[in-house]
Image (cartoon, rainbow, N blue to C red; front, side):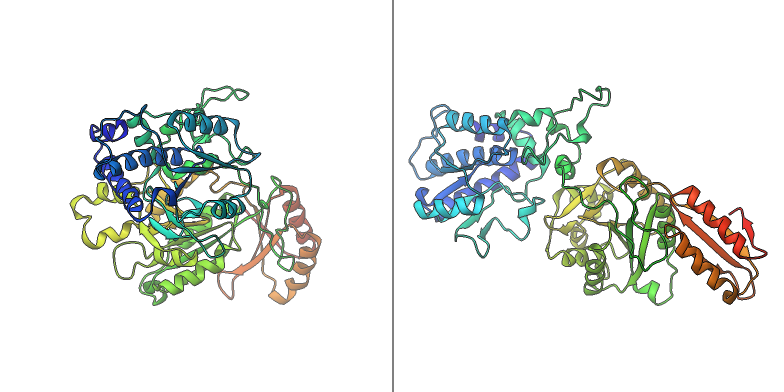
Length: 510
C-alpha cells in the first residue's frame, strides 16, 4: 500500500508518530463499528484530503490484520469502501468541486452529495442510512474543535453519532509533511497561496505568502506549504468587518466615534497578574510602559487592572474586558510555578480547556533543552482550539494570542520593548492597526480648581472630539491641562479658546 510505504520510508520521525496514532484511531473505530455504520465527511480541503488517504491506508491495514488481504494490492487496484459525504454549496470554490469529483473518481470513493446545510443534510442522511460514526478532518485550532477528543459524541441538538477525529492533534506542518511525503494530489488553490479554504465569500490568498516583487494588479503567491508559521493558516479568511472603533460613551469627555480611517479609536485593556504587585513588594513598570506604547499608535487604554494569582480572578477579569475592548493585554503569572495561572485563567474565560501544543513545546525544548521536563511541560498546555502563536525572529518563544487576548511573557521593560517591536512588525497580520497618533497640547495655570472648572466644562461641550484632562504634580503646584485629539486643527482651536477663557495660562512645550 503506497501510503503506508511512503511513511515507513520517510525519515520524518514526527510524521511517523502522527501517522501511527491516526491509523490506530481509525482501526479502533473500524473495530467498534462495521463498515456499513461509518461514514467520512469530505470537503476537498487539505485536512480532509489527508484523512482520505489515512482512511484508505487504515482500512487496508485493517483488512490485512483480519486476513482478508495479503497486502499486495496497489493503489490503483484498491477501492475505497467507506461511504463519503460531500456537502456541496453554491459558494464553494469551483476548484474544490472539481478536485472532489476527480478524487472520488480516482479512488473509487462512494460519494453521497448533499446540497443542504450541514445539520439538515446530516439529519436526512442518517434517517436514510443509519450511521453510528463519522470520520472528520478536524484539527485543534479549528473553530469546531473546542472540547473534542479523538472520539466525541455529537453535540446536543444534533443527530446522535460518534465523531471520530484521527488528526485532531495534527499541526499545519504535519498536514503538509504528509501530503508532500506521500505525493498525493491536493486542490490546486493551495499552490496559489490559499492556506485555509472556506467559501468564495470569505477566503483570499494568505498575504503572508505574497511575493513582494509582484505587481499590485497581478499579485503572485507562494504555495501554502511554504507558510512558516502554521498558526497563521487562517490569515486568509476574510472576516466581516466589525465596527472599526469601540465608541467611547457620550458621557465621557471627548474622543467621540468618527468614520473609519478618520481618527477612529481602538481600545485596549491591560491586566497584570501578581500577588507581589498587590502587596507592594514590587512596582508594576510594564503597565505604564504599555500604556505609552499604545497611546503612541493612537489606541485608547480603557482600563488597567491588577489581579491576584488565582485562576478565577484572572478569568473573571479577562471575561469582563475581552467583550468591551479590541485587545486585552495580560502579563505576569506565565511559567511552570504554582502561581503561574494566567494561561489557565484565559482558557477559563473562553470556556475551553488547556491542551498540549506540540509546536509550542518544540520552542520550549529549544529554549530550555533537557531542562524542559517534568512540570515545565505544563508550559506547553495552551487554550484548546483558540490559540494562535505569534512567531517572530526577535522572540525566542512566540507570544500567545487567544482571539483578542494577547499573553505577554515580559518580566521587565527591556523584554516588553522586544515583544512590542515584534508586535509592530506583525501588524500586517491585522494586529495593532494604527489609527494615527493622538496629538497633545499642554497648558499650565496657577488658578485654583474652582476657578478653572466652569471654563473647562464649556470647552468640553464646545469641542466634544477633544479629551481634556488635568493634574497637579503637587497640591501647591500649577495645574497642568492636557488637550488630546486626532485632529490637529481641533486641538489647536480648543487650546486657543481655553487660553482666552483663562487668565495667565501658559503653553507648555511638553
